[in-house]
Length: 308
Image 1: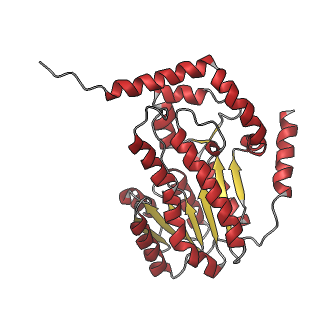
Image 2: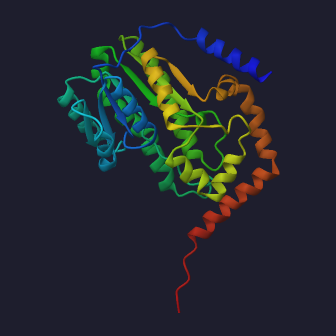
Image 3: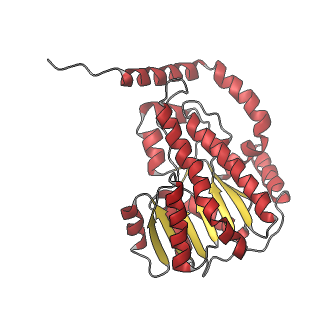
């Protein structure tokens, strides 16, 4: 039954995708944020090997420089914080000045908060996630759009399966990724009118340092992750994620999703989430977990005892 549903989902995706001319990245300029580690690094290395000119943008300049060491003249390292609008405008200018054009933009940089409920999270933590994951995507894409239109290029915004999954104990991340999805959909339609393309990349759980820090190295985060049933809890490597984006760029795909097991959920989410939200709200295990998440946040706010 599951294989039938997955096959049907793939057919629906294929049916909804209009054929467009493929995009060969050889000798094209690709700008990637968050390129110093994880998915961004794997993608930069992959596209460089296929002949692309790669601009590696990261807040950690040393990390991006380490990636670029195995590359040559076709690589540029730029330190920039995606939440800094002026800084990102300057970063895009540097890419333009170095290579003379920008053909592809991949807005990949992102962060995840520690587990917390909306009631107990620090407002600054919410602002930080939104500032990087959502506003940072806008700051990355907006100053490069004239370049993209001029060459009939392509934009990829990295969302997540979190965009349509329940957001318990991690709502800032889910909120940001749902908003990025909408930004990507708007770009897709708007750029089509001027001869360029855009796509949204979705991922389930990718085995990155961010994932390990949020889920594996945090006892409560691990319990939140355990609520995902098989096969939705299946992890993919950063190489798998990078391959998904690279193939999407080549096909100018309006959307990519990896692993494929998330596809039925993505397509049927309108009905599934109505039921799922209620099931989670009524689940005693979920209630107990959320109580522990809140208790930990309260305890962390208590002043430390003064040593005598």
